[in-house]
Image (cartoon, rainbow, N blue to C red):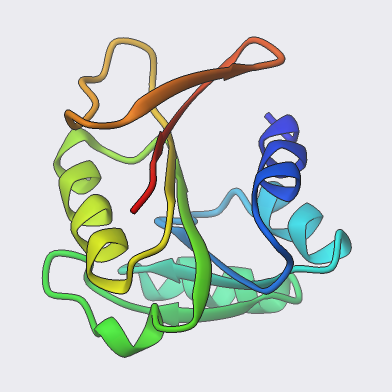
Length: 131
């Protein structure tokens, strides 16, 4: 799954990228940081945010169903790894609001919002929306 970081690094100009719903899996965000990106990890779970900060990442608590849109301003892209189907439309709404691409790696079989383009990178399905 670390290949997702390589894919994003190829697709997105260096700058601020945001992982929505980081949970306790920080490898992709940390790899993007190593590649020179300013990564902001977002999660509604305070413990996940503390874990991300302890891993050396910038992290904030946010509820994407009622987002603090200022957190997302200035981003070059927003991405999420295996978000719930309910989260996907809200990730897309945030991306549209701040006019940046969104990348979603869904769980196998999860429905993906309409208008997203499927890109398969090293066998990993990555859905992309761009303004």
